[in-house]
Structures are given as C-alpha cells and as structure tokens.
Length: 201
Image 1 (cartoon, one colour):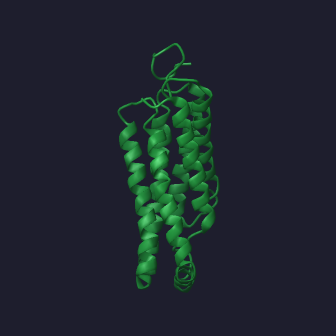
Image 2: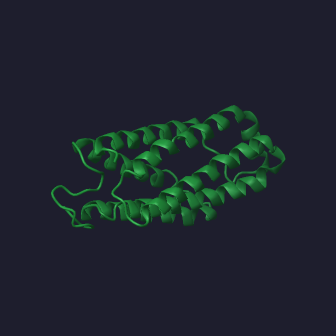
C-alpha cells in the first residue's frame, strides 16, 4: 500500500500540473461566435495541444493519489469516471485543431463534457471522504455542491462559478495531500488508532 506521505506528494503534483494546464489558455465556449472560436484555435493551436497533453499527464498523479485513499465500494468507479471524462475534455480541443471546420459542434460537445467533468468531480470528492472525519466530509459536500451548481449552470452560460468551482476542488486535493504528508505512515483516510469506518476521528 502507498504510504500517506508519498501519496500526498502525488496529490500536490496533480495540483501543480492542473495549474500549469489551466494557466496556458482559456478555451472558448459555445457562447462565443463561430469566428471567435475558429480564430482562437487557429492562432493558439500549439498552446491548445500542449495544454491538453499536460492536462492528460496530470491524470497519472491524480490516480496514484486517489487510489491511495481508504477504499470503499464507490471510490474506484468515481476515479475512473473522472479520468474518462477528463480525457474526453482533452481530446475534443485536439479534434478542433485538426478539424477546424467542425469547431462549432465540437465546442458544443466540449461544453457538455466540461459540465460532466464537474459532476464527476462532485462524485469523487463526496466518495473520497466517506471514511474521513465529519468535518472533512462536510467540506467535501460543500465542494461537491459548488461543482454540481457549476455543471448545471454551464449550459446556461452562467459563469459565476467558473473560477470558484475549480479552485475549491484544488483546495480540497491540497488539503487531503497536506494531511497525508503530515501523517508519518498508514493509508490516507485511516483513522489514528481506530478502524471504525465513516466518521472516525
């Protein structure tokens, strides 16, 4: 089993790669005009490709971190769903670069995939804390709620949570990672001196 400390560093590596990827570019959405979408992908093709490659690479440390959490029946399905949807959001911009004539319909698909990604994030953070202390579960439910609202608001082009939802997810992973690093040994989620399951302190 992966030690808590080592797994915590994988979580931090994921956060760093996620920040690097996000900082490279802000992709257009279906709210933008056809001309604006086409011009963006034409003028920033190399950046878009690099961004999606970095985003896909970030999944490796994420999986190593996530699968080091104390297991439950929903954890692996939630992790694999997150990975699958994230890969879809990485592939679609690459297709737009290769098939500029299909930029508008592919951007619509990307918007749907992006909303699905936040639903996958909400599921993951809720599932990941099933065997964590109550305070951490409550924090996770808050993150999950914000991500669900972000997902539902996205098709309406309501962008009031576009920055907040990703940041609270990153903060959640950082919190879990720091807790892991600060604990000398064991598996992430294991309660000190107790294996009483959910709610153990």
